Length: 389
Image (cartoon, rainbow, N blue to C red):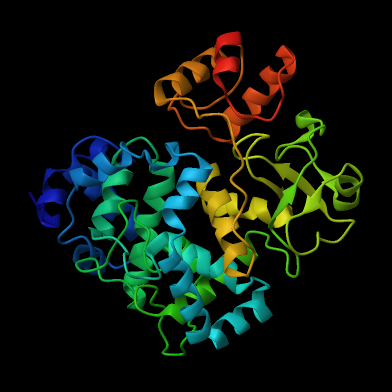
C-alpha cells in the first residue's frame, strides 16, 4: 500500500516525526520531511520527492537472507569467474580503452581492478537490480538495524534529485539502495561522481565512462596506491610458520622471499613492499601475497570471500593465470561452522554474529586457537579443530 505524503504528515505526531527509525511509517516520513526542510530543501521539492514513497517488505527479506558468502573462496570464485565474464572483460577493456587509460592516469587504478568490480557487481551493467532505490533506502532507514548507515543516503538521494540526477519514481537498483553499473550508494555518488562522458550529468546506470571514472575516484579516495600490486598467487614452502600468515601479519617481500615464498608466474613486487600471506582455503589450498592495496577492497565490501575473489579476478583480467586449487581440507558444514563460532565466542573471541560465515574475525579466532592447541595455524577451520574445542 502506498502512503501519500500528505497523509503521512497528517498522521504524524511530534514524537513519531522526530524518531530516527521505527514506529509508524507515515510518522517516519514526516520526520524525514522535517529534517529535509531543516537542511534547506524546499518543502514542495521534498513533497514531490516523497510523493510515492512506501515500505518494501522484499527489501527486508533480502536483507535478512544473505547467504552467498557462506561459499568457500574456491567455490565462489569458480561460480562467478566464468569464461563469458573473462571474454566480456576483454571486449570492454578494448571498447573503453580511453576511459581506463584516463582512470589509471588520474587515479592510479588499473583497468583489471575496475573491470572486476564492474563484472561482479552488475555483470558489466546487465543486472543492476529492480528495487526502487528510494523505497529501499527509506525501508532500511525505518528499520532500526542500521539507520545510521541508510538515513543519510535518503538525503543524498534528495540532493541528487534536486540536481536532476535521480528520479524517485523510476530509479532502480540493488535492494540495499546501491545504484548503477558499479553499485554505489547516493552519498558515494555525490562524493566521487565523475562525468566521464562529458554530457554534464553523472549517470551510473547507463554511462560506463561515468561509472568507471567514479569507481576509480572512489578507490583512490579509499587509499589506493598507484603503481603497486594488490594480490599475487605464490607458492609457499611446507615448513612455513603458518601462524605468521593472515592479514594481521606482514613482512617485506624480501623477507618472504628468504622464507621460500615464490611467485606463480611473473615477479614479486618491490622487495621493500610489505605484504601478507593469504590462505583463503588453508595451507593446502591456493596461497597469495596480499599487498597494501588489497586492504582497500574491504572499504568497498566487507565480505572476505567477495573481496578475495574480486582481487583475484582483477589479476586474471590483467593476464595472471588461474590459481592452483590444491587439496584443501573439506569445509565445515553450515551447522558445524555455527557450532565452531559459538565455541570460539565462549572462549572469549570476537567472531561477530554467529552466522556460519567464515569472515575475517572468525579466521583470526581460528588461527589463535590452532596456535594454542598445537594445530597448523593456517586459519582454516577443520573438523579436527572443532573436535579439539
